[in-house]
Image 1 (cartoon, rainbow, N blue to C red):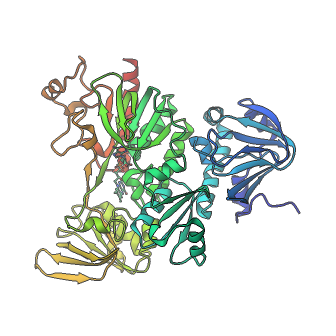
Image 2 (tube, rainbow, N blue to C red; image 1 turned 90 degrees about the horizontal axis):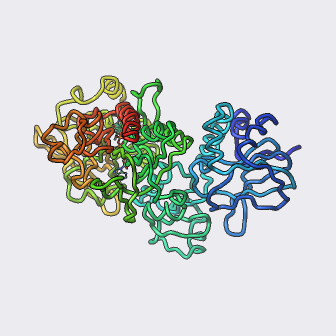
Image 3 (tube, helix red, strand yellow; image 1 turned 90 degrees about the vertical axis):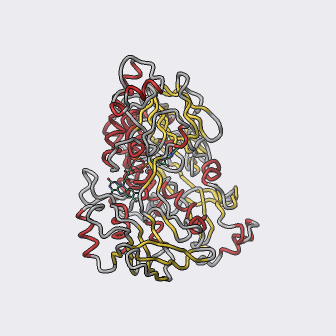
Length: 557
Ligand SMILES: Cc1cc2nc3c(=O)[nH]c(=O)nc-3n(C[C@H](O)[C@H](O)[C@H](O)COP(=O)(O)OP(=O)(O)OC[C@H]3O[C@@H](n4cnc5c(N)ncnc54)[C@H](O)[C@@H]3O)c2cc1C
């Protein structure tokens, strides 16, 4: 009997989609974009950590994909005649997570990443087969925790949660080793020469051990930014990869623009922290924000957009081309810029709040947070749609959800369908005129005091998980007055800019700003960061895509 393709436990139907076999006619079409070469048994074609990973199709012989860990290897996959290597990293240009070696002498077709992108942008049939396989392969790696990184930490630690969220929201597979649950963990820590006090640790590619690393250190260790050229003048730099930024990236790149997205944290923005978006067109049963973002990001990458995981720290708009300065002081020049930096969550006015952020205080309710408080009582603060969604989602896995709102009810602030769902969920209690006034605990949250503002009565509860969903403020501090803002700090655009404001901003052109254009020509704002925007995923996506038609006009001017 033939060896199975992969040691992963896959169903037969999925297996055919994950490891399709191309026909000889399809292989011939692929070959037009690359070259054909012979390979010899034992030859390493791609090594873990390699950059600029090629796409390989087997014409004859066999390849094996293995995950090296120290001196040992785990077999992930055998690639047979007509099958191909690659997954999402092939699109993004990020470093290889595994090693690819010839098992037998044979012949392969090899395509460089740029040629592979041209293939998937040009050949619709092959694009569907290859993109579906890549997406499913990544999903399988995520589900199996099979990547080039491992996290060792405690489930009670805020930093462990932060690191797990960073991997999850960036769609990067990792293995999690729980300090409290995994029996062999002490041996592993001894081997790594790491004490429990130094956890969480991240092990990159089985080699480098990072002690409680920042997100940036993780990104650098795994080479997230290696493939990005920061010096080239781009047609379009987008700052922020929430729904607005991702929409700009998809439309811009698909229409032939050279697009770079600068994002602090991960694709998805606020929407990425939503457990289920039910009002986005085309998803009648809802979609998690993370899934929507990951699909959009894959789509943007397919069209050649690139992402740099760093923060835009300053916009330089007194010279042409404008530049976006990032954390390491590099200035990225761009013919046009879309600012899509959205908004950040409002915080509770409680003195010791920051001590518990990630250790009992959360600003998003996704699968990762739900796991931490499974079976326990939780509090959701806020009366908007995001709070409603969080309450309904958390009610599925927790013992009880207390929804705290400052006002008399939800009707003025929440969609009807969510109010109905909350009313019909027996383990959600709505507490009106209520606010959290103090938090207690040592390493993580242990208790909360809430107060009824009408009766003045306070009550202490032993609840260790509070989800804060109380609105957001615009992320415009980094613009340092480069563009005109409204009185709440949102960016003014188009006809909202008065002649006096344009004169004050030294608007240099005879035409007025286009729709979504700020007080600086060629600098646009889209999504929640824009004054007057309706704070919804659909409007962010709409504005992000509309901005592209004006970017084309700017590039022609
Ligand atoms: C929990 C939750 C649930 C929600 N549910 C729904 C829903 O069901 N339906 C709906 O329509 N809307 C929902 N919303 C609102 C919706 O998510 C937002 O309107 C939408 O995400 C706005 O998109 P955006 O791209 O404008 O900004 P954001 O989503 O805020 O994204 C901005 C991005 O910019 C990045 N960024 C910020 N500053 C910088 C910088 N200086 N440099 C680089 N990057 C930067 C951020 O990290 C972020 O990724 C929800 C919001 C939340 C918080």
